[in-house]
Length: 631
Picture (tube, helix red, strand yellow):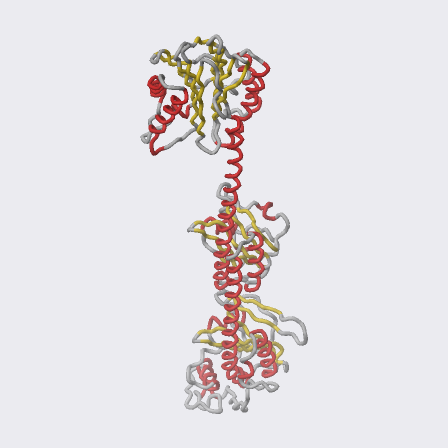
C-alpha cells in the first residue's frame, strides 16, 4: 500500500474489505479466500509470509469532538464556520499537523481550500487547478491517496507543499466528486494507518452530507441576495435618476455578490469607436485615457466588437489583455446590448487568479442588462431634453431671423411691392429686404447663403449686417458689392459663400440700378409677355477676395413685373425628381402679370407647392415682386 494510490472502492464493501482487496490486487496473484480481521488470511505461498495481519480498528465515533454530534451538530454552520470546524476535527481525529477541505468551485477550473490557524488569525486560502497537487489527483482519479514518509509517490502535477505523509479522501455528492479531505503529517512522524483511513472514510460520508447541506444554504442565500440586489436596482430605474449615480450604485451593489478589485462601465462611441469610461473604481488615475481603448482593442474592446461575454482566468496568458492595472490576474466582462446592438461593456477585474466562474458571468450579465436599460433610458431622456432645448433655441432663432425680414411691404407711389420667405427648416439661409435709401429711392435685396439650418442662418445674419452697413456709407452699388464681398470673404470658411442681388429703385425716374453677385437672375416681364433676365454683376460673395462688380440700369414701364427669387423656387422638385425650372417660373410670371404684386407672390408659391406635391419643400423658398403701376 505504501507509495501507491488506493483504487476506487467497490460499492457495498466495507472500508477494510475494500482496502484488503486493493492489497490483493497490488501485491501479486493473491488468492483471498476470506476477508475478515486479517489483511488476507490465505494468500499464495510466495507472498503470504511478507504481509502483516491488520488488527481490526477499535470502534470509533469519527465525528465526536467536544460535544459535536455525528452530523446534526454541523448542519447549522455557515460554510466557512463548517470548514473551520471540520478542519479542527480532522486534525484531532487523525492527530495530524494539517487538515483541509478542498472544494470544486462552481463552474470553475480550480479547487479551493482554506487553512484555519489557531486563534484570531485569518484563514489562508489555497488554490489548485483541477488535476494538480494531491487533491487534484484525487479529483481526477476519484479514489483515495495515501503517501507514507518513506513511500514512493505517484506522479503529481503542479507545485507541492513540503510534507512527510498524506492521506486524501474524495467526497461525493449526487455521484460526483465535489470535495476532498486532505490530511498531512501525523504528529508522531509516522504513517497514516489503515485505521486512520477507516476513520476518515466513515467521517467522510458525514462530512460530505454536512458540506452538501452548507453549500445548499450558501447557494440559497447567494441567490436571495442576488435577487434582492437586482430588485433594488430595478426600483432605482423605475424612478427618475441620474445615470452616473445609478452606475455608481450598481458597482456598489455588485460588490455585495461578486468580489472585484476594479470595475468599470464603458460605452461605445459609434462615431469614433472609442470606448468611453462612464464610471470606474480601482483603476489608476487617467488609465482609460492613457490606453485609449477602442472597439476591438483589449478584452473590453473584444467584447464590444463581438457582443460576447468573456471569463479570463489568467490575463497573463491572454494576448488580448491591455494591462491597465498591474495587480490584475483575472477578468470578467459582459456586453450591454440594446435591440441587438452592443452599446457598452461591464468589466470586472480581480487580483486573484481564476476568480470568476459561470455563475458570476450570469450575474454580471444581469447587471449589464440593467445597466443597458439605464444607459438607454438616460440616452433617450438626454435626447428628449436636447431636442426640447434645440427646439427652444430654434424658436428663438426663428423669431430673431423673422425680425430681419420685412414685417410688411412698404407702400410707395407708382409701385406695388410684395415678398415672402418660407424656410425649409425652423431657420434658413435665405434673405430678402426692402431697404429705405432715401425718400425717392428704395433698395431691393435678396440673397441665398450656402448650407441650411442654423449655420446658414448665422452666416445670413452676418451678411445682412455687412450689407446694411455699406449701404448706409455708400450710394454706389458697385462699391457696396465690392466691400460686402471682402467682408464675407474674410469672415467665412472657404467653402461658404453668398449669392445676392442688390438693386436700387429710383421711384421718381422709374429706373432700377442693380448688380447680381452670382444669384439666380431676376425675371422682368414687360407688356405681359416679354421676359428679360437681370444677369450683370459678378461672382458670388466670399469666392474671390478682390472681386469686382459691374452695375446696370434698367428703365421700367407701366405694368412691368419684376420677380426676384432664390433657388428654392427654380430647383423645387416634383415627386419624380424633376426641377420646377426657370422656364416654368417665367411662364408663371407671365400668366400672373395682370394681378397685383401680393397675388403674384401667392400664385407662384402655390404653383411651386403644387409641383412638389407629396415630396414637399426641400429648400428655403423666397420671393420678391415689384409691379410698376400705370401712371
